[in-house]
Image 1 (cartoon, rainbow, N blue to C red):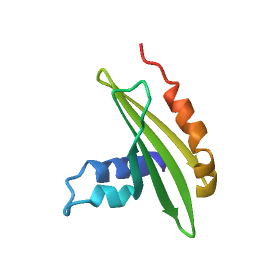
Image 2: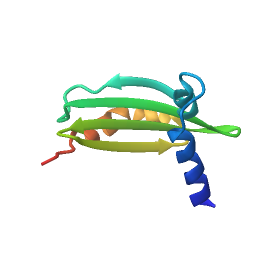
Image 3: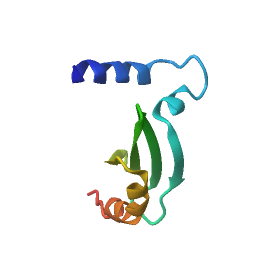
Amino acid sequence: MRTAIAESVLALVRADPPLPGVRERFWLVQGIAPIEGSTFEEALDCVLIIPLGEESIALRRQIGRRAGTLVLMDVFVEDGVALYQAEQDISALFASVQLR
């Protein structure tokens, strides 16, 4: 069952959208900001809120690019407040990533 769901999601993401912004609405990106002071050439901090019925999951995704390598770190929580409170710890962990 999980494989079928994962394949369906990947098919949706890879499909050409019928309207502009479909991918963004599908992933419900709440905010994107550059990360300063990391070891990456480019780094972004993304916050997503994913509705699940009556509840939601909050996600902080940090993405870095350096020398053709992408590093992705996701932190999922059921409480958006906890995600906000852990923002500095999450960013510090991501900033400590070293690529050689």
